[in-house]
Structures are given as C-alpha cells and as structure tokens.
Length: 295
Image 1 (cartoon, rainbow, N blue to C red):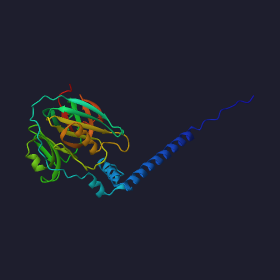
Image 2: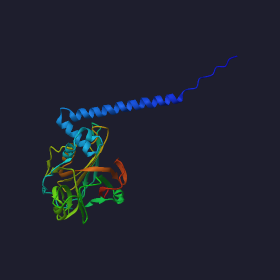
Image 3: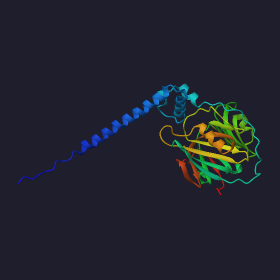
Image 4: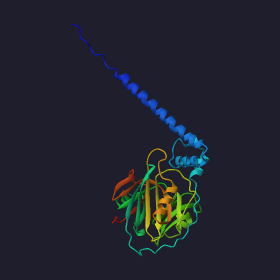
C-alpha cells in the first residue's frame, strides 16, 4: 500500500517573496513621496513651494538639497525682527493669577497643542541643561541650541556683540519683551532671563503677518494685558503637513489675549508634574519651567 507524503513547504522562497514585495512597495511609496515633493517644490504655487522649503530647512531634512538650493533654504528661515515695543501692562504682583490648561486638537491632524494661561511671571524661569526643570510643576521643552540666551548673570551668543537677534526676555518688572536686540543691548537691559526666538508673533496687541516658515513643532510664549504669561506647546503629527505654522500660532495667541508673543523651536515635550504630555522626553537643552499647580 503506497503512502502519501506531503511536499515540504518552501519557506525560504515564501520569505524571499514577502521581502521582495515589501521592498518593491517601499520603493514605490518612496518614489511617490519624492515625486509629490518635487511637484510641490517646482509647481506653480510659489507660496506652497516656500512653505515646503521652510519645512525642510527647519527640520533639517537630508533630502532638502535635492529640491532647493542653499540660498533658498537659508532665506526660508531668515527673519529680521521688529524693534522692541514697550507695552502698557499692569505692574507685577497686582493680582493673583489662576493657571489653566487648554488642549487643542487641530482639525487637519497636523498638530495637537496644550495652552497654559494665567501664569505668574515670577513663577516662570528659563533653565539650561538641568533635570530639575523636569521636576517643576510644568516644563516646556525648547530648542537646545539657540543663537543667544541669558540665564541669570550668564549671557551666551554667536557672532559679535553688535549682531541683531530676535529676542524674547523677561525684565525685572515681570514684563515680557520681544523684538530686536543686539547681544550688547541684551546684556545691559537688566533681563532676568532671555532667549533668541524664531519669530515675533505679536507686539502691542497687533498680530504679525507674512511670517513665512514651514510646519514644525513649536513653543510660543506671550503675555496678556493683565501681566499673566501664556505658553503654547504644539507637537507635530502625521507626514506632511506635520506641525504648526507661525500664522496658526498667531491666531492662538490672539484668541487667548496676548499683547506680546514670540515663537521658539520646540524640543522634547510639555511636562505636567514631571509626566510628559506631548512629544518625546528631553533631559537636556532648554526648558521654560513653571512653579505652581493649576487650581
């Protein structure tokens, strides 16, 4: 009596076939993404092309050079800030502030954000390279390599003392100043802390326009008419567009009553009582730390 023997499955060929299909699919998808980026970059819409260029430049995408020249990438992030404008704000400690958290989920799924309002200026500090910031009640991760910053009596800056920076700083009266400052001016302005920023969003209750820029994670800091501080941490999501624009940050700051406001590149996450809420953990770099919990 003959015995039926099952043929052995050719597992090796099946696995090889799977990887070939996966590789082919990946190549096709990557080609489609590159092709779409090429169409946007070279297409008829100049504003869309500039937005893509700024996004590539801000996020340091390695493929940026395939679509844009070094000159275009440099100009996409260049920004000349306006002069510092003194705003009429209520003096420090004239009222008790009440911290509140607001969460925003963008309808386009390009970003989500937390907005923190009612912060006492005296409770806000800038910290550099310290884990203690993560132990604060709230901590907002900032760009780890700014062009200039002041922490206490220490000033660091690139270039020379006459170079103009887009600066955001807190003076001894608890007033947030935003605008153009040279390193020499910043060093002699009596700032408690300060940091160079990407854009000035609002000055004297006037929203800025034509700010350019691309899509990225960002932190925005502003001050309301009553002197309280407003902080926004926006985290990017998705593929493209992924992140928030400066125009959208202006709209948020305007909605929450900011008089002066500026945008800083985000790095790391927003932390609430030491627990990360958005983004990834970052123990180094800079953080804006807030003492005092929400009611």
